[in-house]
Image (tube, rainbow, N blue to C red):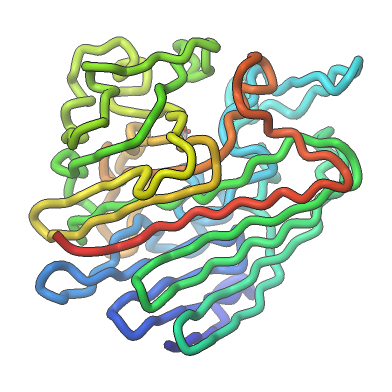
Length: 345
Ligand code: GAL
């Protein structure tokens, strides 16, 4: 177990967490970005399995949100607007007429206060920030603490905590793109995904949930048995087409079950299992990635170079009844945890 830190460009600090079993995690104080995650394959070879920029300056824009902490509201807020009691609150649109991932000044663009810690069995960093996004019309000042822990059981645990002084919508996630092959330019098409889901939110042409929950039974959205990611690209299913040839959907997860999501990559043998206290996860297959993004080995990203499992609440609940709420009230504590566990098959 070890934690080291060094200064990098822009006066940012990069923390490296290492466990005793071949895993390491690099975290930047800017945007809480995970810039590298090494995991052993079935032959014990540790390789980086996350997408990251070659040039650290690219995180100042970070259009694909590589590795970043996302907030105050992860996902899309329809028409950048919600109502609070009688009041209509208009945020600053950041993607067409909608708001995406907390807007331009979202948590992926904030410099976090970071402290590291270490015990016999785990090592980690605590990221803290007190954010007031009133300039963008978000109500309240929010105090946020996010802890990234790397354990000797090859788990990366993210614990989120927040409090507010005014009622405000809040749902946080991390936007890491995984590619379990170890070669980030290799397509994720051959990854096999299994999910304990109760349906997914149907999207309109602007990627905004329509309010309809589709059970997904029997089609490319049915992950009750192992399904190849590539069965969703070129599937001809309207929802895969809307997403830009793949998946970009919020799946409601079965509460409290073990291994809510399991992704296996047969050539390397790497397996990623996810468990979360959140009600669901956005499964995104990097449909918007392209050669504009230069990755850490100097190679260019391509469509489907990585997938994200963004465990979070659904911002669509601000506009549709019957979905889990994302409101945080003064006196309440926002508390969630997501575990990514790595093993071999
Ligand atoms: C995802 C979102 C996608 C895309 C991506 C960033 O969370 O669902 O539609 O915007 O972030 O490129």
